[in-house]
Amino acid sequence: MRGKWLLAAGSLILLAIAAGTLSLWHRGSTKPATAPPLAPPEFTAAEITLPGLIRAQHVVPVGVPVDGTIEFIGPEAGQEVYEGELLARVTNQGLEASQQLAKAQVERAQTRVDSLNSALIAAQLEISRARADAARAQSELERAEKAYQRQQILQKEGAARRLEFEKVQKEFQLAEAHYRALDELARQSEQRAESLRKELDNARRLLEDKNRELEEASQELASAEIRSPANGILVKSAKHAGEEVTRDLKDLFEIAVDLSLLEAVVVPEPALLRRLARVSPASSRWSRPMRWSSSSPTRLPPCDPALPPRCESG
Image (cartoon, rainbow, N blue to C red; front, side, top):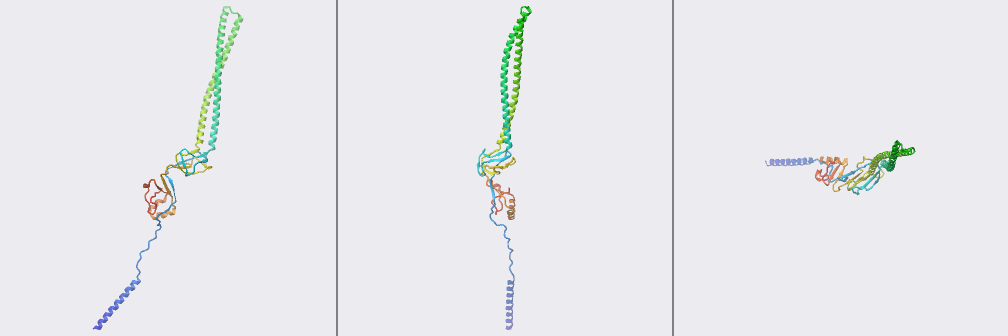
């Protein structure tokens, strides 16, 4: 009986040892499950550096008023300029030729006016002399006429001598002819003076027209001088002396008139734009030029935390 219990106890011990061995073997052959590795972030930089341009928000463009060649440029970019300051001068051969032609025409018109004015003055003096001579001739004619009338009366009464009558008659006829000649000369002088007066009026109107053309030509030539329209800082000069320019160039110069209002403009490279787009959907707003403004930060919405604190699309 005692032997049976010992055999049963031994069997139980062997079974326990086998079970433990199987359990250890099972643990050694089974590997624990591990989580899949996280993909490394493609863009982990906390800040980025972008090249850009800081410029004034209020810029006044200065264009080219006439076609031509830049003869002179005064201040350089970055220098302070003042309203009315000469920035550049443009030469235009056509404008200069027009001014010279207008000057010549004014001189000819002025010479004509002076000549006609002198002729009119001479004609007026001639009229004065002719009228004075005609007045004296008229007085002589009146005396001769009275003497002739007396001789006619005496002739009718038979008391006049023939030779005396003929002499008085001849004197009367000569006085009448002389007066008529002087009166006609005075009348012709008056007609000539009237004609000269009309020509002088026309010449003066022509002179006014030529002076106006000269003034316009001079103004056009003067407009070739480009002057600053305001006080500020010259931030752009698009051409150099000796280069050709046309009226289509509306921004030969740019003047910043208020440096207290600035903005920074950056244009990221396409590769950087693609990287920014993978970081955050919001960064797709960087696809156009971006501006940062120190004057109005409230209008600039925040972007991705990895990017500058405030930005906006252009």
